[in-house]
Image 1: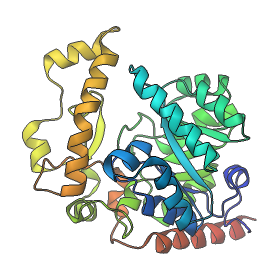
Image 2: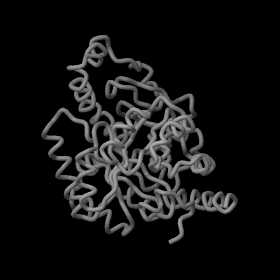
Image 3: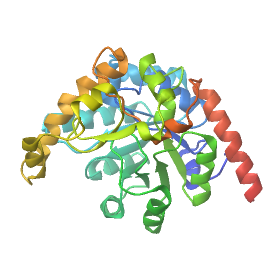
Length: 333
């Protein structure tokens, strides 16, 4: 296999296209994740989505993806939690993933040390989500193998920096850096690679696919939206989350209430408050994403909506991106 655009990430992971399907709650159904890997990129599964949303027994869900593709898969591990029960469950899920052959892990929201230790024990790799250098420094100190730079155009929990600014900030750490945020077409994909990124992570683009189980209303909202329709709301998790502006979002507002904001600012109370918001939001996101606009329409998306024009098969998208990357590599080398 010759990579379409050889990078440190394609070499580390043994994939053809330096393209990740980011883990998405609740949209990471097994068929979507496996389709991205099978097409030449790598899909990242989200364990809570696998079990709680798409109703698979965990190990059987892993084996379903394995039946759909023999190519590399990744697992998302959210490491921050005030709940010991949650942490132990996540550790068990990672152990089972390792038993089933998963060797790539994407971590977020906390210290990834224990994930690194488990992954490296089986020659696995860990990339960590970061929004700026101070978080990257902490992740590098515990031994991560790569960084996913989440910029201000991302869906979900976006960062404060732009694509180029963030790369300049993260490149000195000497690890592969993946661009996450605002990339929805092959031109933007190639631009990120030519800046020096080792790969690109996309989420919103892969929601608008045939394999994704998101409700048709959600997919249509992505097709209809422009950049100006992406707004940040604090009302889902207590920290700004990028969503599509809908009448429901406008009616409810995007700011947390005064008591919630006070609790979120407290050193002792902020983690409890974020956990409360997150638990409350899981059900809202699941229903709105899978049941459509009849429910509260909180639809997470990034500014890449501006370049997404059609609902397509995953393979069509990945192959188109691969051809663009291959052409750019030939032109530059």
